[in-house]
Image (cartoon, rainbow, N blue to C red; front, side, top):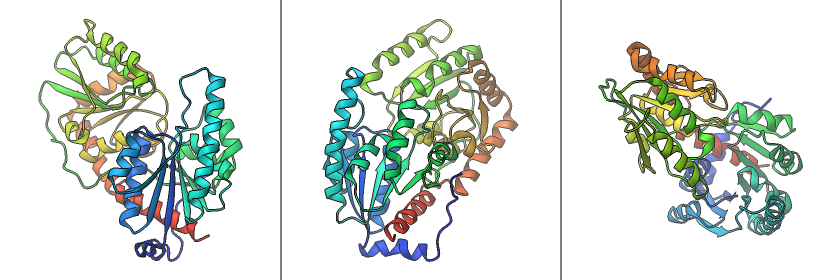
Length: 382
């Protein structure tokens, strides 16, 4: 089983040593796209820089690397390590060649670093190829179930000296593979302004997630149709990757059918989704695949929104009375749970009060960053 995070004697003093510029961190991201995992990584790099660490980020071109540069963090280019949209054998061969190039770049960059941090399982081959002698950590945001990812874990996982999992669900397969694992849960901004306690028709049910199939929007639309109420609207807040355009068109066609017409709003990318969520009565995390440590769930909890979430991945580990859990892919159960939170004001109140309390006692960004920097500092001291 993964080890609990127990600060070593003097860990706080070691963490503060970075303020004198004594710690040098090299980060490798396998993708230049921006999603929840990259948002976590960007926040950590900013925190490390503020604490006096000298940070360099190796990443492919894209929105993530642009954000890194705008944050004043040194960056260098590596190839995209996600599988390209070509026949699979060719894609694997292309990524293998790119991983060799990325690994060589990582080896050069890590020569004068104190610690290397890898973000994303698809960067493991590059870490393995680099054969770097610099201590390395792998920040893991995925519940590894796919057969090809399990093979990658077995073959390249031992290249990382430490795996840092964002939930117990993420940690279990890593521990089973023999890796040294510590759990540090994701955090969110705290304190924040609370959502209003009272809501009036038309009620708004909201979902903040990229419009991609595994986020479960199909199930949510079916659940919303089963509610059978005309005093509720559904808002979907989230952008999309180019590869998911057909999926988004499918969702729009479903929302235009007679049982949903006029009651579903596609908001696209919302710059301040937390502020938008304060207008919601209920928030839904509908993912049909397990989310490692759902950031949207934590944001909803922080403002005091009653939540309906699917019962897998990291969600049941943190929700702690802030909402109702339903089986993944079960539209009927999801509709029932949404209806309960809309109709039972006492239940909604208890859920709304539980979320901020849970965030305040260990799920804040400040706590997450402090723990991660302590771990990296201790790894650098090896």
